[in-house]
Length: 250
Image (cartoon, rainbow, N blue to C red; front, side, top):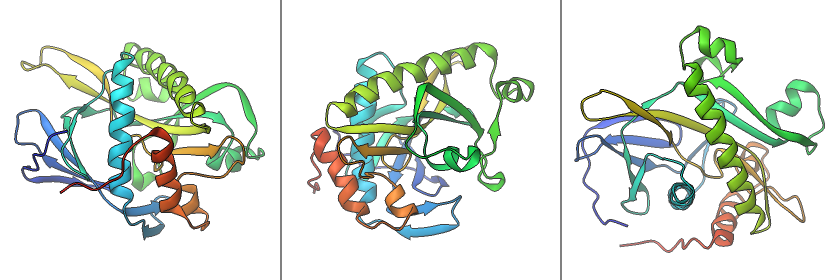
């Protein structure tokens, strides 16, 4: 981990992160906040220390995905709350992976939460908070030119590989990976002659559902969504089981 904290101008502030221009060409500094939102920001709050935990869990997951051949935007963690990432053109899609029925899928289809799916389900939604991130069919994506056939095929392949790996990783520490959200981006070469598709954004208890394998206890942002309390303790428990140190650094 680098100790550099230098960054350029603020580029964007979202619900959970702030993006700054990196000091090196083609880089972004990603700052993780403690702000918590739910239901398309209709519910807002703060989970003290969440940004530190999410930064370190994201680092851990991205490094391990790189080891199995998944290209990511992650370069280095700079400090407790910030990491250096590659600047990419984000594809305006949220890629949702469901292994077990939960959340909006249960409500939308009138299904019982906790029902195991016969095979992983990959859904797409338009990345647009103002519209409520509406679901999209593959034909929508192609017709609206959000991604082409080759990109969609690559997204499916990488997403299934990520799901297989992460389900095993979490199961190994007694956690069920219920569902999660991914984002992908196009990383262009220096002369813009071509690009590769890579995993971007973050992976943390903010954008996935994690249940204890034995008890079913929720270890993710559903504790905030559903007013269950114990959000920090749940996030810390995920990090602890993964062997991630949460000691703050000077």
